[in-house]
Image (cartoon, rainbow, N blue to C red):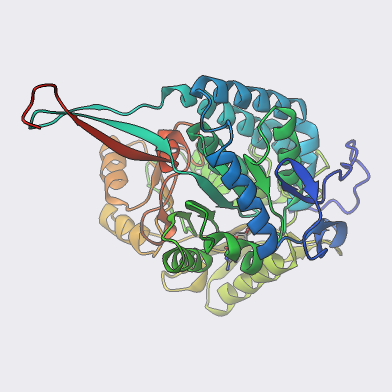
Length: 481
Ligand code: ADP
C-alpha cells in the first residue's frame, strides 16, 4: 500500500483527553498507589496521556461500590422499563458524542476515525438500545409439576460482573459485555485493555450523565496481571466475562475456579477460514477476503481491491484505508509472523513490510503457497496478513477449515446452495457467513466453539449470561403437602 507520511490533510481536531483517572462509584479518583501508566499513540509511538494504574486495592474499592449498588441500590430493584429508560438516555448521550468517542479510539487504538464515526460508535448506541428494549421483557415460566405443586421460575440478575476487555474494539467490546449486564440488572467493573483506556473512562462519565446510579458501572484502568487478575480472582464478583487471548482465558478460568467459582464466559482467539469455491464471483470473493483480514483497522467503504489502493496512514486522514497496529508489541509480533512465513517457505505475494518512519504501520500482506502446518496458517496473527491455501474437494475444504484449535467463525463464498448448506453445518465454529463476512448485528449471537471459548456475545443469549434461574415451588391448596 502507499503511505501518507504526514497528518497534514487531517481536518479533525485531535481529542482533548478529559478523563484519566479511575471511575469508581460515580467519581473519578486516583489509584490507591498513586501510580499511573502511559497510553501511547500508535501513529507516532508518543505518549498521549498518563492514566491511573489500578491494581488489586482499586478493584476492591470498585467491587465494594458495585456490590453496594447491587445489594442495596436501586438498579436491580427498579422495573426493567425504568432501567431501559436510563439505558436509552445513555445511548442518546453517546450519540451526541460520536465524534469525540471515535477520535479517542482513533488516537488510542489506531482505528480509522471515519469508520469509528460511521460504524463503531453508532453500533454502541444501537447495542445499548437493543438491550434497553429487552430489559422489561425478562421473565420466567410457569411449570406444570407432576405432583400437587405449583412451580415457577424467576430470572434474576447474576450480581456483580467483571468485564475484561481487549484493545481490538475498545468501544463495541465495552458494550457487548456491559449492555446486556445492565439490562439484566447487574452492576459491574470494567477493565479496558491497557493499550486503549481512554474511551472506557469517557463511557463512565457519560453513564453518570445519563442518570445511571453510582456504582453500577465502574471503570478500572490498568494492566492484566494486576488489575485484570484481581477481577478474575475476586471473591465478591459473581461473573467474569473475558475477551482476549486463549492463553489469558485459561488463566481467567483457573482464577475463577480457585477463588469463588464465579461464572466465566470467554471469547478467545480465532483463526477463521474463508472458503472460496470455484463457482464464486471472484470480485466478491476478493472483497470478502479483504474485509476478513483488514476489518479491525480499516475503512471498508467503498471496497478497494488493488493492493496499491490500500493507503496505509493516519487514522484521522480521510484518505487512509488502513491505520496503524495498536502498539509496538503487536507491531513486532506481526512482523515476526511475516518473517516466519517467509522462512517456512510461503511465497510473499505482496506487502510484508512496515511503512513510514514512525508509528506502527504495516502493509497489507498476502502469502500464497501456505501449508496447513505453517505458523502463519495455525496461529492468530491479529494483523493485516492473509494466508492463501488451495483445496480441490468439498471434503478437503471442510477438513482444512476444521484443522484448527479455534472455532470462532468461518466464511463460505459460493452460489451453490448445497455446498453452502453442507459446509455451514460441517464447520465447527460459532458463526458461519455465507457470501458475506463480519456481518454483525445486535441480535445475532457471536462466540466460539473449541478453544475460541464459550458463552455468546450479542443477542438474547448474551442477556441470559447475566441472569440466573430460580425455581419457586409451593403446594396447591388442599394438596397432600
Ligand atoms: P490480546 O492478545 O488481545 O492483547 P490479552 O489476552 O493479552 O489479549 O488481553 C486482553 C485483556 O486481558 C486486556 O484487558 C488485558 O489487560 C487483560 N489481561 C492480560 N493478562 C491478564 C491476566 N493474567 N489476568 C486478567 N486479565 C489479563
